[in-house]
Amino acid sequence: MKLWHQRDITQGNLAGHIWGLTWPGIISQVLFMFPNVYDTVWLGQVGRDAQAAAGLVMSTRVTMISVLMALSVASGAVVARYLGAKDQKQADLAALQAVVLMVLSAGSLGIIGILLARPLLTLAGADAVTLPLAVRYARVLFAGLIAMEMVPSVGFMLTAAGAPQVMMGMALLSTGTLLFAEPALVHRMGLEGAALALVGSNTVGMVWGLGLLVTGRAPVRLDLRNLRLDLPMMGRILRVALPAVLQRGTPNLALSYLTRLVSSYGAPTLAAWVIAKRISDFAIIPCLGLSRAAPAMVGQNLGAAQPERAARSVGLIARATTLTGVCVLGLVALFAPFVMTLFSHDAETISAGVQTLRMLSLGYLALALNYVFDGAQGGAGDTLSPMVINLLALWLIQVPLAYLLSRIANLKATGVWLALILGWILQATLMGLRFRQGQWKLKRI
Image (cartoon, rainbow, N blue to C red):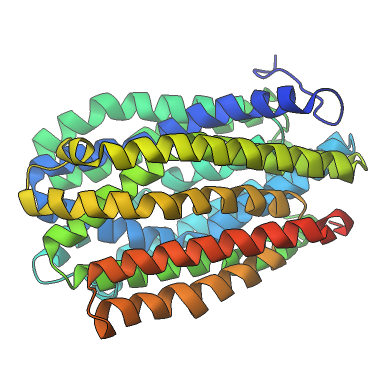
C-alpha cells in the first residue's frame, strides 16, 4: 500500500495542485531547518566558540555536498519527466541509479572530510580557538555524511516525483529523534554529542525513507533484484547534474569565502552571522515550500507535453512567494532584537546579529524568488542557465563587492551584508528574465 495520494498534476486546478505540493514541503522544510536552529541553541550552552566552530563546519560541508545537491535536482527532473509520460519502469530505474550515485558520492565525500578536516577548516577561516573545536565536530559529522545527505537528496527527488509527503515523513522522524537525542548527548558528550545527535537522527529518517522505496510504497520503487549499474541511465542523470554541480557549488564556495571574511572580524561577528543566517533560512521556509512545488509542476507537465500549463504554475508560485516573503521577513526584521536573545546571551553577538538580520531580510526575499525560478529551470532539466547566472551574480558582483566594501571601503561586516543583498537581487532578476524567455520548454532529457 502506497503512503501518498496519487495526484495527477498534469490536469485540473493549478492552485489546488500547487497547495497540495506546498504544504508538505513547508512542513518538511520546517523539520529540515529546525535541527540547525535547535543545534544552535544547544551549542549556545557549550559557548559562542562552539557556535562559531559549528558554523565553519556547516559552511565547509555545504560546499563539499554540491555534487549531492546537483544529483537531487537531476534525479528529480528525470524521474518527474518519466512519471509525467506515464513510464513507470524507466522512472523506477532512474530512481535506483540516482540512489546508487548518491550513496557513492556521500561516502566518498565523508572519507575526504574525515581525513582533511583540519586543512579544510583552516582554509575556511578557523582560528586557533575555533579550529580544534571545529575539527572535533567535523569528524563526527563527516563520518555520518551518508545519513546526513540521503534524507534531503532522496526527499527532493521524491518531491519532484509528486510525493512531498515522503520527504515530510523522513524529516519528521529525524527531527523527532533529535529533540530527545541532542539534549541528552550534549550534556553527556558536549560538542561531539551535538554532531552525533544530528547524524543519528538523520539515520532514522534515511532508513525509513529507503524502506518505503524498497517496499514499493513511494511513487518509484527500488527493486534490489535489479541492483546494477545502468550506465545509460546514469549518464542521463549526470548530464543534467554536471552543470548543476557548478550551479550549486558556486554559491556554496562563495559562502565559504564570505564566512572566512566574516570570521576575520572576531568570534562575536561570526557567531552573529551563523545565528542570523540560520534564523533567516528558517524564516523563508514557507517560500521554500512554495518553490519546491515548481520542479514537480514543470517536470511532469513537460512530460505530458503541456509547457504553457507549466509556465502558468510557476507564475502563480512566484506571486505567492513574493507575498509570503514580504510578510514573514518583515516580521523578522521588526522583532530582530527579541529573536536574537533566544539564541545568544552575549551582548556583542546580539547587537551584531540584530543589524545582520535586518539587512539580510531584503536579500532573502530576492533569494526566495530565485529558488522558484531555479526550481522551475531544474525541473525542466535546464541546469546550464542557472549555472551561468550564478557564476555572473556571485563572482562578478557578490564576492568582489564583499571584499571591496568590507576591506577597501572599510565597512567591515556591513560591507559583506550589502554585497550579499545586491548579488541576490541581481541573481533573482536574471533568473526571472531567463525563465520568461521560455527556452526551458524545448529542453529534452
